[in-house]
Image 1 (cartoon, rainbow, N blue to C red):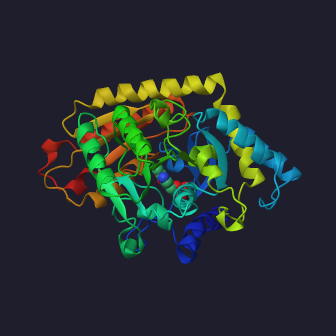
Image 2 (tube, rainbow, N blue to C red):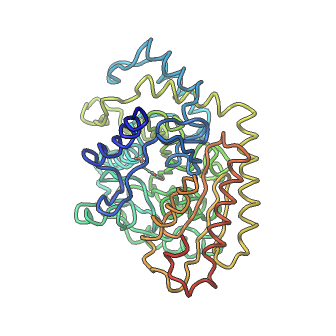
Length: 448
Ligand SMILES: Cc1ncc(COP(=O)(O)O)c(C=O)c1O
């Protein structure tokens, strides 16, 4: 009897959720019910029935050090007892200043101002607004941006505008500003992108900014491009007085092997957007780090030339203190060694699977590994439907992977254990052997 009551309570959470909640990126008519997560430890999440799931995607690419890390939890708790929040216009506080100082140590020499926001989208939004207003303050109207095809920069309006048309922004197309899209500088095809960019620079004199996800386009399916090619584009943009915005929201904090993906470039962006790993995903926070010439472009005796942008929770002391604590962990030798080990394991796995007949374009950079799964010929060719199906295959086996269409990728937290990483690899191998192309006379659904 007691057990029944308990089970009912557990079921109730999902039932109650389905009655009152609206989840992100979810088609509620067809989606499976959500999994109620009760606890997180290290790279493992536990549902209410205590089933364990390996978080192979670092909970939307955020988590660096593992779930509910005691050092991070303690940092928030201690800060909450001291100062939980204060308005950040006309006031300041130690966590905000200290974090800015520490983050600037990791930035290229030309970047020396930190503007705080609440998440990735708003850090991009701020970068775009700063670029536009920088020119506006000089009575110059520049209203065009250049971005990569298949780019994704977030879900607020300016962030949506600079993203390639896709299901993320299609309904809002009429309301988005003018953007010229060029191919990302894929290795071996950099010349074509350089040519496209040169033509755009030649054609338009109203380009305010060039925004890019450096080296890896995450939402496009972890598509990787050439550092040398990107370096050339940044040089061209700077030469044409176009403000370069590096969206490092997914790539920063050693995801690509270096602290910033733009650390692979000689030419440095004017604006760098950070979020996700900044707090290891424990609390929301965003940073728009800017070159001094941009900051100076807002200095004036006219108040109207100030940057009139802020959020109620700007520079929240809990989030900024937490981000500093996350840096403490990241700076530990053991963490850096772990990053190297994960990167090696990912590269080995990619080499191993790259020869399989149903694997295409297997690639790895830093701790990110990805490949395209070649679908059986008679499978439902709606790639968009396959992501959800592949997801279910892994979830049933206790691995959280969130394929982007038929792209399967692994982006684990740095605390992941060897045996956990091996389980992810084994489960992927199982998936690949169950879905071999020579099984294609069967319907795709049967494989699962
Ligand atoms: C490159 C990039 N930019 C921006 C965003 C948006 O960040 P947020 O979801 O925190 O708004 C994301 C999120 O995945 C991203 O990958």
